[in-house]
Each structure stands twice: as structure tokens, then as C-alpha cells.
Length: 449
Image 1 (tube, one colour):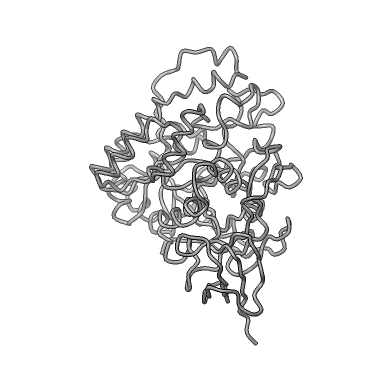
Image 2 (tube, one colour):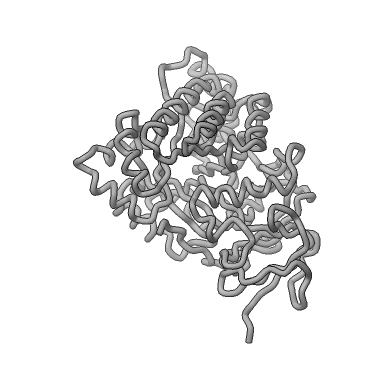
């Protein structure tokens, strides 16, 4: 008896365009695609059928921080948003993922909790970049299966994950390059205390924004480009928020440097002018900037200066977010948005871009960046059967009751977004359908071979 499943849609994303097709899949793999409706196929009508979304920037807090976001809730939320693969950042868990042994603990903590696929980054901190003393240990991490190495150029806020400087990055880059991995950088460089009134008005978003100026980001990006040019290490700028760095990234790409860059859904959906004071749900670093700045980020996604969109999902328990006090100085910085990558991004971009050009920003482009485009990011025979069905024309209100993150506090709550996800298939298994998780533990580890 055949175990092959089939889904037909009038709007199947194939070859860069929407067209009628039936996708066959069996044992977690796409086996065939027919450019017409076939007998026995599940009929998705006019819903868009496309590859599962890849969110290449997510913070999951296991192991160690049991009251924070864990793999179970994070991957359920991902499935509800049409995200079939997330990549976990190396900080916020205990221990931080800066050694091969710590990575083994991370893998153990995620077992039997993955409702979507999960890959992992390792971390670069001063302690594991002191060559030649720790060179072998760092190489063990690079060979452990991580998909890249993350560093901060300003303090991360986690004591176990301090920032590195030019010297440490210069020592690490040749080794990272040797293993064919990418160095991902949080680009802010703290210079000196900004002279404003933030300490006197800790609930003021305007003063918080001024406390982390664009120049911090601009200088850090310039440094990473210089080091990339010298060491020929693939370099990725995470969560670009300053439009002033776009010309630098564009010039680096035109020069042929192996530079990529992302922005996040919240940097293109929200604008500083609309953010109320004393609402710490919007606090993140770098901060959400002004509308004119953010419109330039959207244009950079159109032109390819920015490669793809992520969430930088970084939730925290409500008490640490200072939701009652609204104190932006004390509040944990991070946006809870994993479940809303697709609709928030589409709502922000739909007036500027066609759906055919939008889809690769969440699928094909992050797959190429992660070097998994031989199996993910396209509907193609031989690729993993990670699929999503969604309606880009349908509008819905984000309600707390529908949020599957560990905590339902998110700046998207109450917002009206376009793009409802109706079904998410992970490795050939329908995980999410009709607003419910219907199958669990369908996800797999996504490790560097």
C-alpha cells in the first residue's frame, strides 16, 4: 500500500512563480511534482503552497533557564507561524554554547521537544578565542555540527557571553573560514555614555532610542567588513537596524566580499514614532528606529543588499520585561515574535513587493545562507517535505489566546496582520492545522555535516 501523500494548490510556488501543481511526498521527502491536479490529492484551492519558512535567528533558553522559552513552546509557536526550521543562538541558555561539551548539553536538552527542525550556532567569546591555548577546543566546537559562530561587539547582557574585540575576531576568523562556517556578528560598538536624559526618564522610548545611536552600529559593521576583507571569512551582519550601514554592505558585496546581512520583522513592521512610552514589549537592541530609516531597510530587501528576514525571537518572563513598571532601562531587551515572522513581514512588505519576490526572503535565501539549500528552501524532488499553506489576502487580529510562545506577551498582540497560516508540514508530518498542534516531535536536528 502506497504511503505517498499529495497536495494540490492553484498557487504553488515553483520556479520563482505561483502556478498550479501537485506536490507528492513520502517518508519526509518530496518525491515528485506534477503541474496539474492529480487524483487523490488534498485540494488546497487558492491557498499558497510553498516551502516551510526558515527563521535563522532565534533564542531558545534551554538548558538551564527553565522559566524562559524552551524548545517545546518555541517550536510549537514556529509551526503555528509556518516556520519549519529555526536556528538557535548560543546565548541565554546555561551553559552558553561556546564549547563542544556545552553543545552536547544543548542537544540533550532538545530531545523529544522538537515540533519543527532545529539547527544551532556556536558562540565566540574571549575565553574560547585565546590561541593557541584553546585552539583545539574551539576547533572541536566548529566540528560539532553547529551551522555558524555568533559573536557580540558590545556586551550581550549575559555575563557568560561577553563581547569580543578586533583582536579576538582576527584570531578566530581564519579558523572559522577553514571549516567553511560563517561568523555572525551583533554589530554595536559601545563608545561612551550618550548624553541624554534616559536615566531621568527611564520609560521614554525616545530617550532609549537615543541611548543606542546608529553610529554604534555603523562603526561595528565597518570593522566587520575590514576584517572580512583581510581574513576572507564568511561574515554575516545580524538584525540590521541602521539604514546608514546599507551603503557599506552594498559596497562590500560589489567588491566580492563574502558578506551577508539580515533584518528583522519588527524593524520593518514597527516604527519608533508609533511606539508608546513605558511599554517594554518593544525594547530590543539595536532599537526599532524611525519610519524613514525603516523604509530604507525595506528597499534594501528589494535590492538584495539585505538577504533575508528573521525574528531574533528573544522572549523573557514578564517580570524581567518590566511590563508593570515600563522601565526601559531595567527591562530585558528582546522581541517575542517567532509565531509572526510570516504575517508581520508580509504586512510590512506587501505594498512594496510581489508575493513571488517576497517568498524567497523567508525560504530560499536563508537556506542558501545556512548552506542547506540542497534540501530546504524550495519545492523540489529530493528536498525535505517541509511545507506551509497560507492565505496572504486574509487579515486576522493577533490574540493572546492564540500565541504559543511560553508567554503570550508580544508587541504584535492586538495588531491586525495579513497572512493566515492554515497548515504546516514538517518532514512530511502535518504538525499544525486549523489553529491547533495536531502532531508532535516531527522535527529533527539540522546539523553541519
